[in-house]
Image (tube, rainbow, N blue to C red; front, side):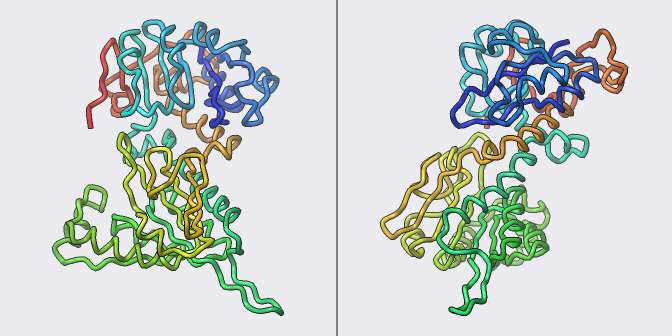
Length: 386
């Protein structure tokens, strides 16, 4: 059974779906691997390193697809490759399923397509397959470094003969995996950090990392409702939303750095920072919008561009931060894919390090992981509408 690796073939994407180390792991399970020539170069993985790991090298992405039963990718396949798919081929990657316009084509071709973003993150056995967490962790770290590079002052407090340099004030909006890593990184750099999230349950995590929680007054009834759901399924009242906006507006008005991380799969990113707030911010302050690629948390943000407002505030549209750490993000992503792909074969084969001569696919749409990730199978689009 052969697994293919195609090049991302994009000026904004440097990652590769499988690394040489991942190839070695798959080879131990009995898989063969074919890699498009140059697929890993932007992440500093050469063709020679893949060949040393046991992979074959193909001259084109079309050749990879032609040879492979399982095709791995970072993002959606180019349309010209999708048209060449054969029945029962498998595609695995971050396919932006709710915005993907090729699902009907995948289904018509008879391909089974697994979108890794749909992984049920509450399942303990799925944690080592969680591409969103592995990539967001690195993105939160890098976002702070991007901000430090854009900001015209240092992060930590300095005591100098010419006077005291005050520490930078950093505000993090959205305290998921990326937000928590951003808090930890900004603290390590010596900044004063504040954070906000719609989930009141995030307060303990923020404070454990040394950040200050931007507290929003909450009625007893609303507090109980939020606590009962753990915050994740909580729908705040209109009054709470207004109160939170006021707290955030005040914090941002005095902030030096703002990092926004809020994204909703299949929908435009929620607007967290409006022009009225931007107008109050100090000249030279910096906003890193990690959701710029899906509409942006910050009004005026443009993906892959840095905009300077009339009052001197810099808005960085950071649409694909993990690609800036391509070597490490590829390594983590590849491990996620290896852990998932080995669930697609019979358990005895997956655990057999003796490299069996013949692997058998074991696709089970009743399985809580496979069923959740499969967006097309046996000629049908399985993705539920949002």
